[in-house]
Length: 182
Image (cartoon, rainbow, N blue to C red; front, side):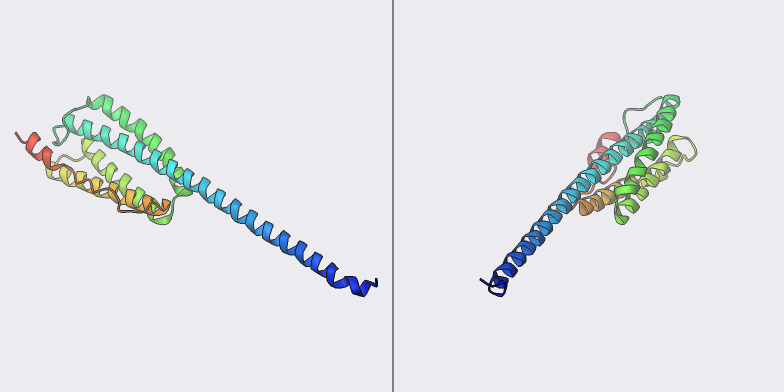
């Protein structure tokens, strides 16, 4: 057999090998990208949950100190001196977790997280005794609640969680108006 007679078969083998290599490479690349995306989704989820929990702790301390100062809607006051120390520690932890949000969050979620922690800072002004008007306290609580809801909506979108977000958490709750105003 002459080389010319074998050339079509040889070309078929080469084309088949190249095709197999390209298909395997594309499949492996796609699998690697999918695994990387899953790892980043998990990291974003953990980051958002940790940040939310830290900020909720900070908010809760501010509310309890506010209760000690006589503001409504919180029934378990915390000693002001102890609370201010705890508030400073909580802010240190929040600031540390914030860096992770900046690294892995998308633009909308970072903006919503910033709005939420700035609303909490405004509530802290009451806890620290810098502001003292009860109407302002109630309005700031409402802003904190709305900012939290927006953060969760943005985080859910970024994580690709389908379905409607949880119902908004209006603050103070309707039942609290009745219970606290007795």
